[in-house]
Image 1 (cartoon, rainbow, N blue to C red):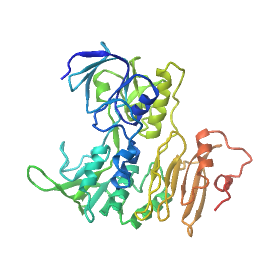
Image 2: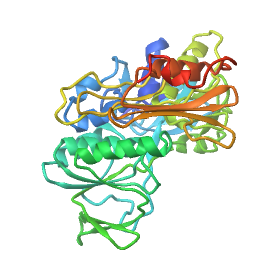
Image 3: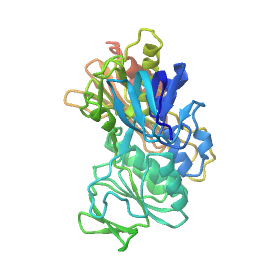
Image 4: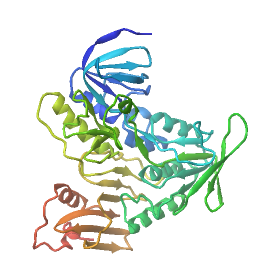
Length: 424
């Protein structure tokens, strides 16, 4: 076990996720410390691994020098050192916190500090591999949470042959991204895959076996109904990992507070990714993490750069089990949330704020025969957001218009926003 202090690294990064790996690829001489034993990987594609579409090596990120399986236990700001659980002490000139986030464990009866057998979070590659090992055709699985992560997990489990129930507390699926009509189409897509979807459904607890190693047997709903479950997936959101920063006395609110140079309240420490809070916002999105890492790389390389926030986006791929594999969706730093499909699959895009406010203009086109649906929200003279389902021909133009945040031409017909590709 090493106890001596190592020579000071110019930049030390705590966290080997997508933000940490991106930073290491753009800044020379970086020391990256990662808790996971795996090399850095694309977390966005975990559902593809769960479904058996990809093996873990396929989602690996470009190689980076990472000290794997090591956890930082304390930051000594006075000495500019980090202390690790293997006894090593690493000095730094600049420290970057890329500690990411933890899955939210809901306050359910039967869910204590130790998860019962059969209960799985879905955040890391180890989570994904443990879940994949537990799934077999016909197994009864309940996914708690109908956001982006829950929808991804439910679809992947269905592709593995599980009998899946998706329990969502809100009024419809993916409430952050979709309006009610698009969410209804998504629900019908999942149901066609065999997923049983319950919305406005509050989970009260888990019923588990007795003994030293309890195992889940059912999910109890608030109305007293029970959903039989051999596997339960917790997809209830994430929470920034801020423990190290708090213990070191850094300014922490929802996340670790940073300025436009991604600098914390300590001028020698920066933060990026899911753990960072900029302008009062914790993005929790891969696209924002990558954009922040790119800006910070410029700063650490001695060039002028400023982070002004990210136009929030997500990207996901949903396909039918019978569809041939296609390149999986990835998350970029600009554009839209895109769910791209193949025959029998799902094509869905969502960007910005698709929920209209009083005074907004809403333009909507629908073709039930072709299963095509488009809607955009115009707020004042700007495009606020939109949803496209079934036909994504206009998504590039719409996403760029939204991203640029420029006033729409005064003489433009609002209908033109949805038909400038030639319409349906």
